[in-house]
Length: 115
Image 1 (spheres, rainbow, N blue to C red):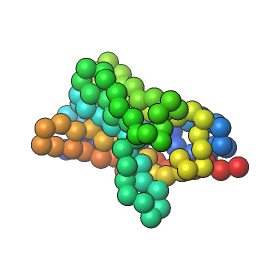
Image 2 (cartoon, helix red, strand yellow; image 1 turned 60 degrees about the vertical axis):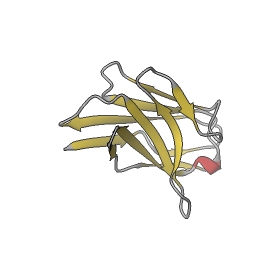
Image 3 (cartoon, rainbow, N blue to C red; image 1 turned 45 degrees about the vertical axis):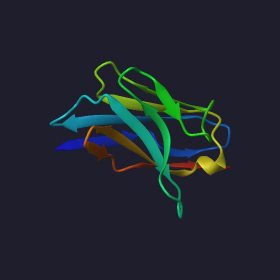
């Protein structure tokens, strides 16, 4: 069994920053592929950022230049640095760890951007 736990969400004003963290525990604790997704009310879940074993990263168009994904050397934790936050970034943010034939999701952390 694998458990992913996100933290770092909260309420922030437009233009502010937050850093989300995701920690893995359980039978597998090292993942080459990790990603952040988000889901706003009434919307489909969308990919925000992905990091692959080589360290290469990919971002959704709406967050390019503002968000940055990283992970620790053990590939046990992933982070999402979010800068210049906008009200439209408000959503539940989920961490995903995945590979060929499997994927695990965290329970999500709420990010609200509002003045």
